[in-house]
Length: 119
Image (cartoon, rainbow, N blue to C red):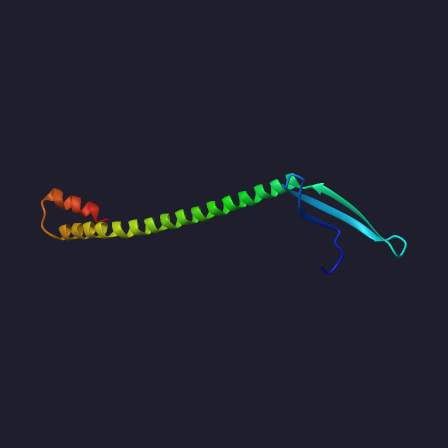
């Protein structure tokens, strides 16, 4: 330590052997030049510790949710890319067929259908 310690969080063991989180605050100094006087206040930190644990748990769940959402988003983007690629080939083939039909000799109705699909 490089300076005075005025407060801290500690885990103590109670009479039943259970861990007890506490906060301690201290002030002190020399009272007559020879004796050190220290005033120490210790209070339970159980509720604060439970609150901090709850925050840490919530943070972990949030981080897991974010990772899951990122993975889902990446899969969605890959699916859309594959879908676009897989649909492009049949559509190009159909359009090419229609163009070929429009150039050939067809009955009047077939020619009209081919022209309407080439636009």
